[in-house]
Image (cartoon, rainbow, N blue to C red; front, top):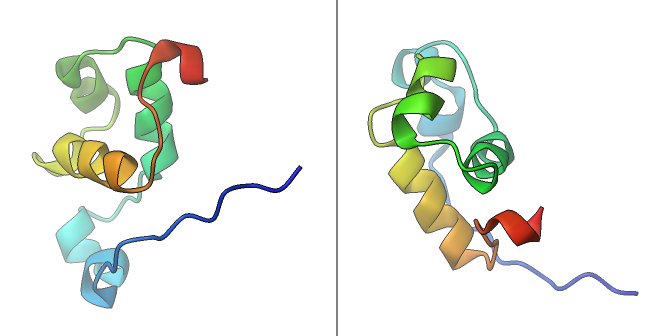
Length: 76
């Protein structure tokens, strides 16, 4: 079975490599996807990942939508 090809949106290198922007901790997008699939609220996610930027969850939602990744619980 072949996996569908996904086009990733361009993320500037400064965002992915500058610890000042990301607060020194990287949280993989798929980790946030898993949290949302489990039914965690935005508040729960921020409590678990305090270094996540205030717009981090919205960015993950946009990234997931652009790449055909479902946030529904049945997708896990």
